[in-house]
Length: 186
Image (tube, rainbow, N blue to C red; front, side, top):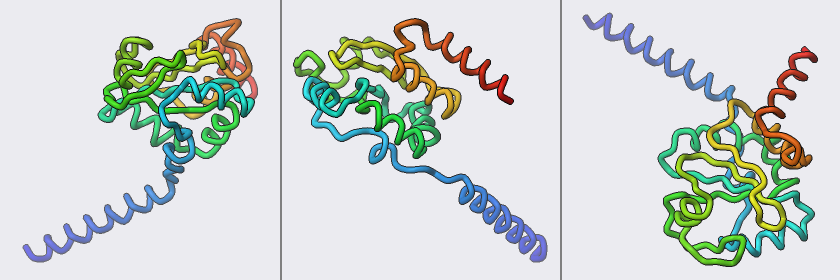
């Protein structure tokens, strides 16, 4: 009996070593709140002015809630990746909005309200995550609901807005074109 217990301990220790080694190889990326999202005082009318002054293409709002597993997945597998962070920081000001938040904020038109009212009443956010892009006048120009399937798809979403393809087609068509082009290259 003592021998079986020892073997069990050895197996458990080896399993833990292999699990830890696998996690060490999968780099966790960088904190999205420090490297993807911009700091804000919650006044989006002022953030529009900042975006214009910095030559950005627009503002990206990430509507999330704490217990959302898809929001968590986006933050830990996509928004934490340095290439994603660099691209979006270059072209957009990006902010997180808690759809259940009571924190007072100011919308693009200068109206003060809790985050949850801005999410639900103004932007009709019912599920999370939602990525909403706004032009430099505060008008929503593109919206994506749910987690993207990959880093590549999220980058395509940014490119779709940054390059103005949203004016000509829906993101599903743009994504289909990008997928087809990527398959032809392989």
